[in-house]
Amino acid sequence: MKEVEVKAKIDNFDSAKEKLVSLGCELSEPLIQDDKIYLQNGLDLGDTRKGLVAMRIRNQNGKSIFNMKIQLENDLDNTEHETEVADPDELHEMLLNLDYYIASHVNKKRVKCNYDGMEICLDEVRDLGTFIEAEKLTKDEDSVKIQNELFEFLKSLGVKETDRVTKGYDVLMYEKNKS
Image 1 (tube, rainbow, N blue to C red):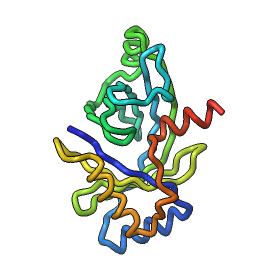
Image 2 (image 1 turned 60 degrees about the vertical axis):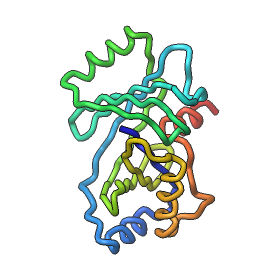
Image 3 (image 1 turned 45 degrees about the horizontal axis):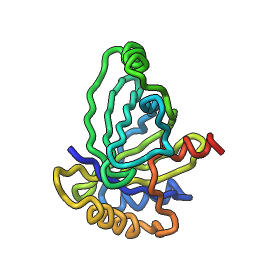
Image 4 (image 1 turned 180 degrees about the vertical axis):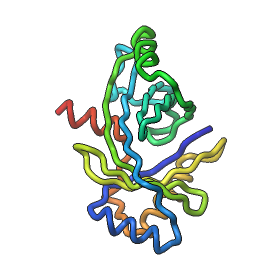
């Protein structure tokens, strides 16, 4: 499956929640996500490009999820596979033995809802700030067209084009820590 998303930095988390509720969205309970992103040794998150493989172990409210993304047209357009894992520490060791390393570490609190075929996420990301994401899972649709449609929805919530973010949290964290 292909995950296509857009995101934007927002200043008012509560206002965004209120707008989603006014559309009839039912917000989830907060999810606490601790993500470790792995890349093959010799690569870094400044090397984002088509074909880049990133692995992630996510601890989410006591459950561990392993995820693999292969970048397609841009940083927010990926082929994605994931599964729950019983032993994240053992998986970590396996990745290290396969010549992967932790390239980024992201902590966030997320609230989700669904609206009109989209998953909407409101994220409070430690050391980065607050964001809104809209995403859609698809098989073969035009990713850029979908991203434009998703961003039109965010604009209907008051998000400005200047707030748009075109990189994942892992890359944003990498860039912040690099500077």
